[in-house]
Length: 128
Image 1 (tube, rainbow, N blue to C red):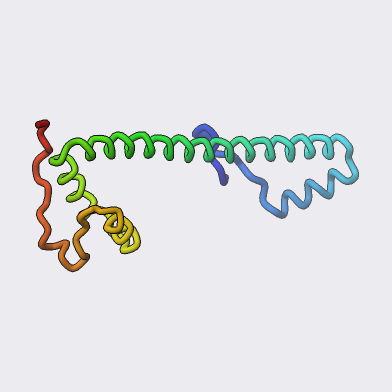
Image 2: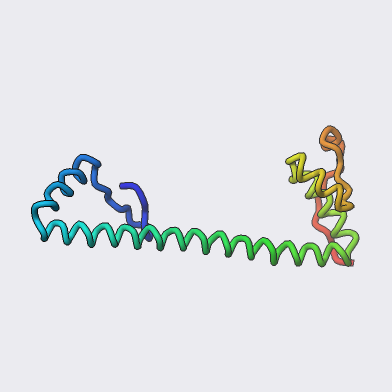
């Protein structure tokens, strides 16, 4: 049982059983017809699962864009929020390439060796 579809495990034939079934299909037209239907359904299911994964990725990307846009807009008008966001970026943006990019975009990113000495946001920002 390989894939799970809607929470239901899908059984797969062992390669040896599949080979035997295909050999039988070459001499029995009913088996060949059923095997063809099986192959078509398997392909359709595979396409459906691929589409679902792609849609899930698109939805996640859209969610991140919306959240990011809202955070960006708030950071532009609220200095306290931007300071808290900068602390979060310093804490969670760990890839060196990401840190360099953010620094090039005028974010106050601390060098990696100074992270331990950076202040940590311990209380939520309050509206001004």
